[in-house]
Length: 453
Image (tube, rainbow, N blue to C red; front, side):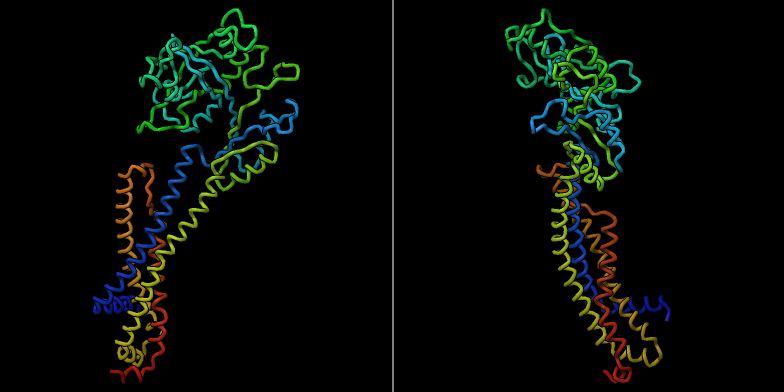
């Protein structure tokens, strides 16, 4: 018997028993929808967690710091972040890029307004990796001949009137400063500046005159987020580290640059040591291994991956529980399919006997009932998927309107692989539930089946 004949006969048999078939399919629909929706909630929570951590930084990045000298050793013995370490880390497997970061501070002045800037000097590639949305101008470029600054969108909020103390946090209004076009002067020697403002403070001799101010051009400003929210770049001022280091050496000459270590004699080192290093790894799965190797070198490390791993384990348990709850419904549906197929066999015993007497292959009889069970699973799976997407849409719609779910991701997420897997699983469950009834039909005695009324 041809496969198309078996397909036609199985569908025809189901169509003759419409009410029973519909009720059995309904059980599969509820089971599939329960599993898909439950798992989609777990996947949505997992994706939301990943997006949240990505907003704090890349999931494949490692930040390296100097280890704290707990034993009270000398400054010379302290392990520093230098160019030699960068070359060592670049040789570690799976590391794709190493970016040095030099953090320094400076006082920005415009008229009576001042601000204490947190300046991050880093390679241009590292700045581009931070996914900064440019509002005005552009990011620092390697083609720039001089040091240029890129301001986070919240930097302007920290400017205050030096005479009155008024600023954004007291008046609620931003200072009348155009960071892109107004001349912004920077004072890098902040210690000398405060000594010039308060000569008697600190018990040290104040300089005869305030430190030199430097006019630094602005290359760009970060765009404010559409929802007036927070960004990890907003409070910082960025610049090319290759332009910053020569500028600092020129400003401080033979003095120790703030934030840099000094020798026992109080002299600066010839080499510039970095505040931190940013390591890019090819995959998140390799982050922990690379992080361990760097830690063994004697440095402190930090990454989002270590937090993600523990959270994903917890969410994995949540998904298993949610999927198990939905699986109970599908198990009940499988019992319904078995019951339907057994009833079908009892009703069609004589038909089975005639088929055997006419020489129908036993495997065809088995395939006929397996196809009927598979049909029930397939139809229930398709309708269950449609119902799942509808429920998921409603959940996300209500969640989007709720104040506590204002994240960008949906809390119910049905990927294509889940839809395909659930459909295959529904067909498999249907055929598995119809397997034993099909065996029973195949083993019926032809003469006993014909005598059955």
